[in-house]
Amino acid sequence: MGLLDDYQNIDETADDGSPALDPSTMRRKRMDLERQIVILDSDLGRTKREIEQYEMQKRKFKKEEERIRIDREDLDKKLKNLDNDRVSLEDQIRLLKKKLKILQ
Image 1 (cartoon, rainbow, N blue to C red):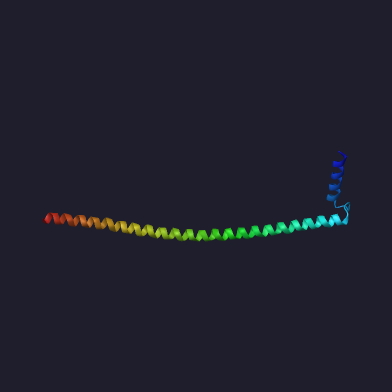
Image 2: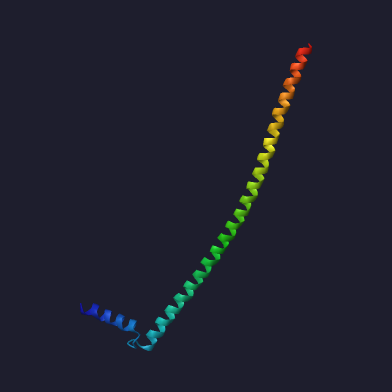
């Protein structure tokens, strides 16, 4: 148990900020922390750029979706008009055939 207590004492003195560690160890720890900060900062930048790209793609899809919706509505209107025309033409043909049949 004595060895574990020694490690805990070293960690506690390092956390307190007291100069229990020699300068080279402190410098090495500081450099390690700075390196980790640089790596994490780089990862954060990459993540932010990726978020921006996905947001741009989302806006692009939303615009395309709106354009497609408008085009679909226009096609629905055209289809409805053409269907009405078809029904009207079929009715006219039916009436003309009846008239032709009466004349014969």
